[in-house]
Amino acid sequence: MYFGVITLFPEMIDAVTKFGVTRRACENGLIKVDCINPRDYTEDKFGNVDDKPYGGGPGMLMQVQPLRDALRVARSQAPKDTKVVCMSPQGVQLNHSLVTDIHSWGSVILIAGRYEGIDERVLQKEVDLEVSVGDYVLSGGELPAMCIIDAVSRMVPGVLGNIQNAQEDSFAQGLLHFPQYTRPEEIDGMRVPEVLMSGNHEKIRNWRLQQCLGRTYERRPDLLKNRVLTKLERKLLDEYLQEHDF
Ligand SMILES: Nc1nonc1C(=O)N[C@@H]1CC[C@H](O)C1
Image (cartoon, rainbow, N blue to C red):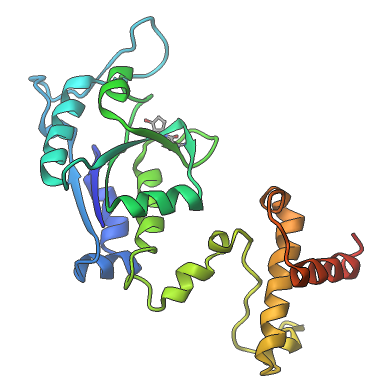
């Protein structure tokens, strides 16, 4: 999987290329992350890449020319016809389905804006999709871009120790994840649920599924709205709701 990142702060992207499973993925050649800095391509003699918004208003905007030329370089380094995604609060909400789609592309160029955003003409001419990580405003698109790099990389075979992890990730099943415990069995008067130490794999599987269903019902009922429950799932959820006085 290829990621091209257009960013004024390439050193920020070290957070995914120099740590954890994504670092190992880079070292193993499973993913490649290139950073292209618009400041290296500005024609402004003072090195500026931003200017005031027409029509007035607070802050500055990133100008077309440095972004356009940085994108040209990014496209030349990326596989042919690589799609361009701009991180923006005006974008479609990032979710498991969109992460899966981006993974299926095999490559993506991510624009991480700064200041108040970027000139609309870049969006119109160069960008295939605007993507948002949530309904709030950040200081830059780098953290959102790294969310995409991390989430998409986890889907690349070999990046995670056991492919099952990606498939078991919460949203891969369309449900929230079950609660997890590790040693010791008891601490501060809190015990690990007995079922998890029973060695009965079917009971453990059903308990975990029940917890997924119950948690999703309590915290993200929207995820259950279009889900057709199996007979077992319906039974487990009904039990959970009774036990929790719903
Ligand atoms: N929420 C978000 N999801 O993706 N990106 C954002 C976001 O707030 N971006 C900032 C807006 C102006 C600045 O350029 C960067």
